[in-house]
Length: 211
Image (cartoon, rainbow, N blue to C red):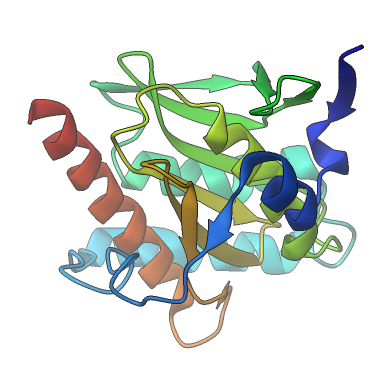
C-alpha cells in the first residue's frame, strides 16, 4: 500500500532515508552564491531600500505569507528578470515525488515556482516570518527532487520575508545538496546580496539550457 505524506511533514532525515539525499560540505559544490555576482545598479539599490522600509512597517503587525510575496519576493523576482521571458512564474502548483522503493509518495503545494520552458529552475517557499527556515528546507528539497532533467542543477530559495537561504541540488548518481549562509534583511546589505545571487542563478540556468 502506497503511503501519502505531505511535503511539509518531511524532515531531512526522511529525505536521507527515502531518497538517499546527502548534504555536502564541499564549498566548491555551491560556489555560485559567492562568485561572479553582478553588481546591483543604483536604481536596484533604491528599490531594495524601499522594500526594506515596507517590511519594517509590516513587521509592526504580522508578516503573513501572501504579504511576503507582495512586499519582498515579487520585487526580487522582478529585479532579477524572472518575470520576463524565457522565465515565467506559476503560483500554488502541486507536485508529487515518489521514493526510490516506490512505497511512498510525498505530496505538497509550492508557493512560488519559477519555470523555464517546463524546467523547474528556482523554487521559492515563503512562510510566516515567525517560522524557522530550517522547517521549510526539507519541504523545498522535496519539490526540487521532483523536478525533471536530473543532469542539470536545481536551485532553491527559502525565505520568511526577513531571512533567506539558497540551496543547490544535483541528482547525478546520489542526490547531493549544498546551502548558502543565511542572509538577513537590513543587515550588512544582505538584501543586495540576495538579489545578486538570484540574478547570477538566472544567468547560469539560461546558459545551462543553451548548452
